[in-house]
Length: 139
Length: 260
Image (tube, rainbow over all chains, first blue to last red; front, side, top):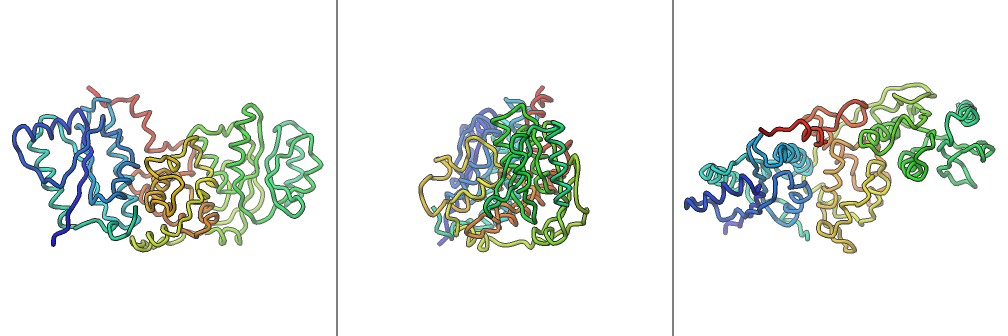
């Protein structure tokens, strides 16, 4: 039997979430395994939230924010992008594939891009399979 | 060397270059940190100096909180000095208000600590010969290795308590939403990864946490490997230079602005 895959997405309220909304209203499908959380800004997503998601059984996490220069709070997306780089290196160090974490720039008008990004990311994770952390009986 | 250092400490205290000097004292066969001042100058006879590492930089941070306007002297080794440089960058201590009396470590101690730079750089005065350190190899380990080590954790918070760079008033490791308090076993690997995330690009590889850990988790190896990757991404090494800026320091960027 194929194992279920859980993907968590943190979307910025101003751009990426609106983009996902647009994908919804224009009836574009994206993989149902992707669960989305709305955050005020992609810079709000701290490293702890991402690490906690992996701890609680997420196979992959992505963060999406506005394009550089478009951030509602001026530089939240740049901050998030830097942070993701650090967390990727931490995951790599303890032996979880850094591919399981990613950052995307999606604007409010890019419903099609959101669908494309979601499908591509899902295909990538499906190839990797479920996270190795799941084998350990952790809380 | 010990007598020379004692004389120097006496000199700077009498000349009022410093109000107090933080060093180690042998007291009934116990080695303790001790603040030598003008009032207890005779205790300087019991001044202790040997091949030991002690987190004096953590203690001076506490003393400074109670006496912010006093000028203090402190005994530093290479690693203590790196701590102080990092604390200065994070606005926890002002290096101009400190008098650093540096000791260069002996070859024996550098080997024992696996230290790559066992000498002082910016100290006001330094004793002992400068020797070269040795870089250590860091073989990459897989997930099962780390999970086995992390699962031994008894959640004593020793690594956080000893680390001079852990200076926050409210610690994230005590946040109930992330790590549930009062429960064992600890939420591994989250507990250790949160600390690793905080120390990424800040850890100066002194090894105090690993020495303290009762479960012998190779924390130093973990932080060192993360730091190597941090260096590849941002080209920044902690504790090396006073002028370098921590790459994840965001306030400057917000000032510059990326908006329209």
